[in-house]
Image (cartoon, one colour):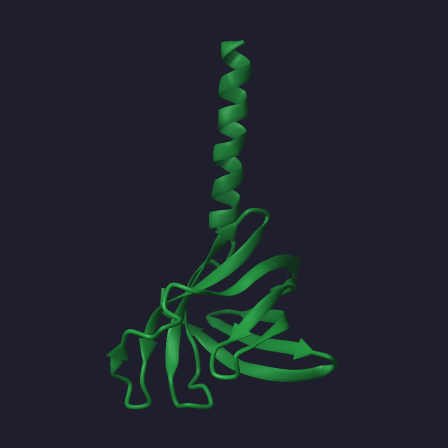
Length: 131
């Protein structure tokens, strides 16, 4: 019984390590939105998918400020589809107060963000990896 419990615990630990090693995990700098603001999104595993939370906000002059959206999930339920493509989740755009069906494409240290709603798609630009 002790061996079984050890095996189960080890499989959970290894499963978590695999998610943490996914190349999308990290902190990403967004482009400026319609209001000139930008931010840093921390993408982490959440269940069987990935979520992104706004951790820092910057005004149009690049000065850090405490946004009302800080701490809010702006990306959720994104699934790794292989080849640097992530989809199946949602992206929230604070400047437009809209939630989109999201698509992310990872290429090195750049993350191309796109969202669609009712057939209308909007580019969230190319985000750059901070860490």
